[in-house]
Amino acid sequence: MSIVKSKIRTIPDYPRKGILFRDITSLLLDPEGLALTIGTFVDRYTGKGITKVAGIEARGFIIGAPLAFQLGVGFIPIRKKGKLPSETVSQEYDLEYGKDVIEIHKDSVFPGDRILLMDDLIATGGTMIAAVQLLQKLGAEVPEVGVIIDLPDLGGATKLNKDLGVNVFSICEFEGH
Image (cartoon, rainbow, N blue to C red):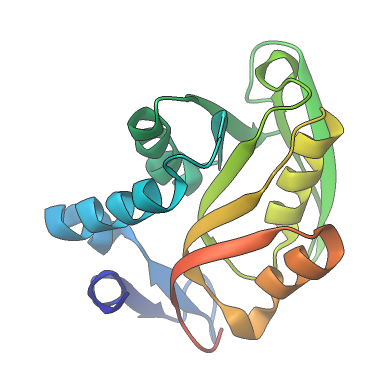
């Protein structure tokens, strides 16, 4: 969707040289762009049997919570280790130079839940794959993942679909890193 894409700024060499950072804060500042973004997801997922929306810390919260509200379902925050106060379930995943862990509250997911997973973008897919595995570990079905931006050159959406059978819906794509 070209209107949404046009409202996302690119910041070269952030967080390190050679990276083109796709910054959604410019999109979030724009009332038309934000409404169009949330509206696109609402239109896609209304009537699809979604029981909850999960968002990956932190930008997944920005899109996931208003989407959950519009769909009339609950919202599940997926956070970095040690950030949730109640009993959690965790999933470790690989980073470029090491490992990390994400967690959710154990009582936020029930077998048979149909959970839509949201984030701002998908790049290599490591965090997204770990989040899907975490939800599936608790018995949830993840019929699709929604993102504003796909970076197809990094292969995350393809990997998620190939390895876990989960489709990724994106509003726009950016080539390159």
